[in-house]
Image 1 (tube, one colour):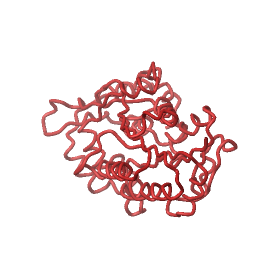
Image 2: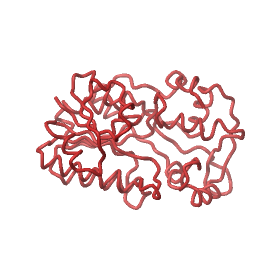
Image 3: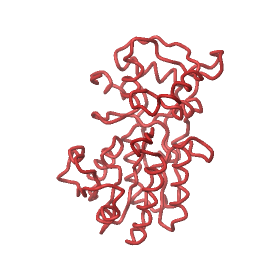
Image 4: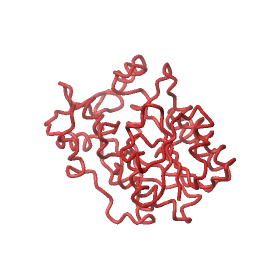
Length: 310
């Protein structure tokens, strides 16, 4: 079976491609010109060079395929570079959905996110808009909403490596963010980290499982507090990092001014979503898709941080 993949060159996309190949699917990937070297087993992938601005490139990717996986997403936007949540999460996905319908490609699998909602951050609302458009399209859809995804990324952007680079490698204590002035609950907001290998297995397994059509699945592992996450990443990186309570308000003010610059480590929206927490249970998905032993978020699974170049 032939499967179109959009967002194949990113962290999660690479694992999805590998899982497709391992299960004897034939992936077709739309790749920007100059990014072909990001595809590891390029001889096993049908690469279409182009971008999502170009309907012809989308058509060439979708043509003669039976399934679409839309995995395009960003965690931070840079409007001056025309990199926006609205464009990548919604407008491009809408374009792919419409062209898939015209070409009679009925099966569509969407990477969404845990915590999507109306009146949320730009990230959350555009992910929700994409879900709603897909649901109303008439296609045979499956939607996945992962919490924090972690795992070896081989140089691609990944949460734990980014956190190590932006916070743990700097010569001051790691921040335990909290609301208000008093650090009563500093660093106690929670996430449900899930390993990228489990995410990729679930995505690819859903292709053959018709009972997953018309379903939305949350993907998350065991809950961890921000404090626990910082400590585990620090230890896995071979560091003994001090932790310090950090009121989020002044950092948000700085982020409002500077988060349009790539060198500033965090955006205002990212801070907002961190403090909201990002937890969900992946039990339903693990049971349905046959993940008997999900990879835990622990020192063993974070060992890729020990030899990571800073």
